Length: 346
Image (spheres, rainbow, N blue to C red):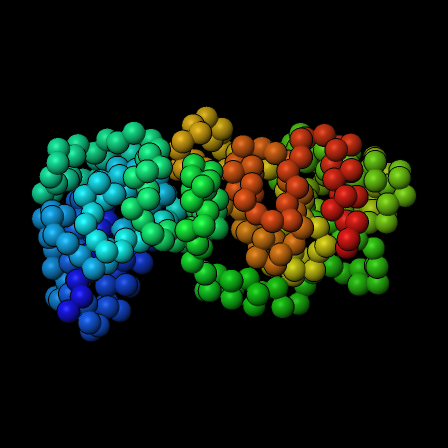
């Protein structure tokens, strides 16, 4: 009988633990003998483990397969597993970070680090050396944003990093995109540019209107649609004389028809950058890969829309590995040039 080892930090209720529990229940009736190693024996799912799963106190045996379930910023868990694993085949599963402070500190419970050998004390250098990551033959990211954050740290590992298809979320996007809604001017035959803005206009979003003004002066045949606009935004559109080429919408109950029908998506800012998360370090995927990413941007990527984005820190890290994306400086003239460039083949 083949032996497989699962490794995780704990079984606190979160995406990582849910995915691990699902995998355990799927495999209990298979040809595997299943062991589970936890850094911390705590969490709501500890008492829900299948009886056939054996909890082990240390990683000291040889296994046919090993799988590590980790949040993307949990360097200590990944490094410890890479150091101790003895398996014919090892796989790493990465999930968005949900508790960056406790994970990075290695202090998620009073019972921390149960039965750990080799002097592990919860602190490893960030990021993990590339040679240690070579232990994992395959690395599966739960989201494309997780893959982007990981490849920002380890660009040479692109050949072994894959995205797990989020069929549930993708099906939801596609289902909602087919409902009634979207652009009311169905007789318009020009290019449709779409942007989601904040109700209170900031500097980046003002650049969108200024870029539209430049395109309008050039005679470019387009319409820019602004979702989540406010009375102030609509007033500014009138002052700039853009009523014929800029259409403002209040927050729609279902934005997905707009995203599915547009020709080009414009991203001026990542929503978490409004929460003053600009002080992240270059080696902190907890900030590179925020848990609550922009659903509109994710939908635009899913529907394979060309994207122009201002090169802000979080947008850069989210989009630098995506295809058909143009990252530009926050300048209206550059935006206008970028739109013309991206629309040449549309």
